[in-house]
Image (cartoon, rainbow, N blue to C red; front, side):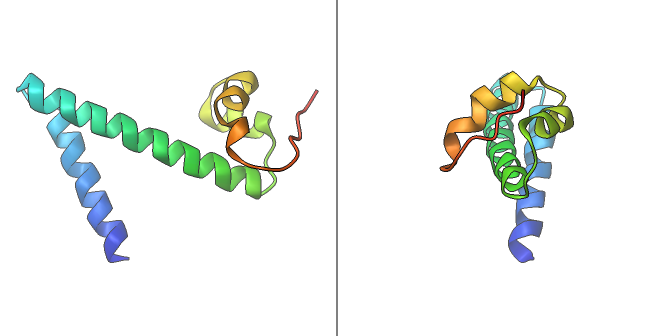
Length: 85
């Protein structure tokens, strides 16, 4: 639980830094947030696939096309690909 709280605190600090008037601070924070977002998306897409979600269900949740989410994440997990028609 402590790690989660520490991570939330770090994320809050990054979000605040992204609004900095100093472009160097702000842009570094934006980059860190972008990397965090990509990591979280990969984690949650993996959770969804393991839970049996279709690519369409994941795409709907992320508000992107099925093709976009499939192209980005399909090669990350072994096993058969359950593509929908």
